[in-house]
Length: 115
Image (cartoon, rainbow, N blue to C red):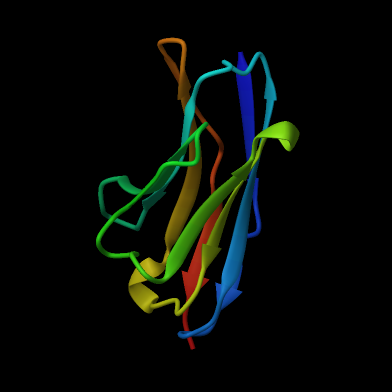
């Protein structure tokens, strides 16, 4: 089993920045992909960004150039630096880890972008 705990959410004004963290613990597969997803009120959960063990990244078009995903594999942590935040970025952000045929989710951290 893998446990994922997100932190770093909160209220921020449009144009502001936040940094989300995801801490992984438990039996973490040595080869895995980690990612951030988000779910806005009344909408489906959507992919934001992913990062592999080797550091390969993928971003949804809606966040390219504004968000940056990174990971510290030694510390079993993943980060999402969010800049130039917009009201439409308001959502609960979830951490996900996929490896060894299994997928795990964190409990989510809420991000609200509002003036």
